[in-house]
Length: 197
Length: 217
Image (cartoon, rainbow over all chains, first blue to last red; front, side):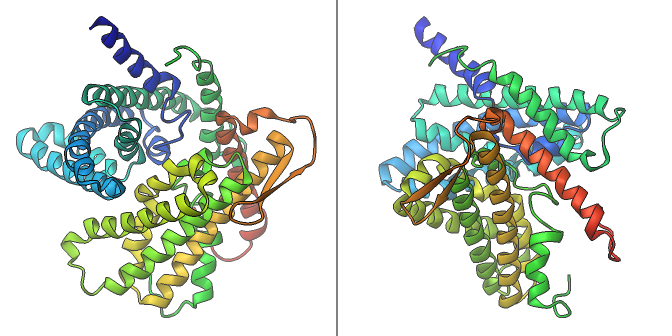
């Protein structure tokens, strides 16, 4: 039992630090560069993101193992997962608007952005590919969400400072953000080999 | 957005230079870094996107009168994921060695903002020929960007260039036997390479293209 618990912990650490989605798998870059300009938006995005990620990991796991595998139509996984995610995002949008307008006012715009994000789709696809169990899928979703949050917050705090720095004209804006990300990614390479799964 | 006045050629060129997906709009960045440490992978990824973008544009344009505006986004997503599934299966069948490396990123073409954006902004409002030209232009622009990035990274990082000579064959040109700047083929180097190329693109733009009347940004 405790052995299993350690396995889950390892899964979370590896998904968030070693195989960090942004720095080693290069996913979700559009959102990463889009919302990392300000700390406040970065934090809002991280919260929305991690929760949607876990819920969608759970629902897609159920759909995949209970519907797609028994019917032997796993080749339809992309269409089904994108459908599940789009539906989920739409539903949480409506529910949030009804139950908590204050929260909706703060996080609503991020919700709309999420459905075109590749990480959200990558998590169910990787879960299905690696044949994770239900709990493992949840742990993987949580780890990936935390990793993305970490990346966003690091980047936002650097970019707020970067506003004041003097950058050569052709590098202003995105090119500089890319170079900075490259340097952070280099630091993250140091995490590889932290845990061998 | 009126397409009557602009010729097909202009539509085609628009996607390659003025609205280049990666260097100008900074959309669909994930594969531009993930698969570009090898020229061959970069080229095949670019071809896959070119195919999906063109076919999606044609399909949406054909269906544009039948689509209810209220449910258009789910329908676009369905069309896109259908074409992506087809591409994924074709690549798995014909180029299995490339597919083994870039498979996940092929599946994620579904979530490309650029493809959805072209369907929404262009193909759903225009007839087939302009939509096709627009899709081809966007796709070729993407292919060009991926080729440029992977050319740069493989040459500087490994001193070699891997060119596909057929579906299953390839030829590796070796220029230097040492590994000049290994960091460029590592994950972190991808970000640096894109940053540097983007800056170069900006610089060329301000130096040579800005002399015309238009001013982008």
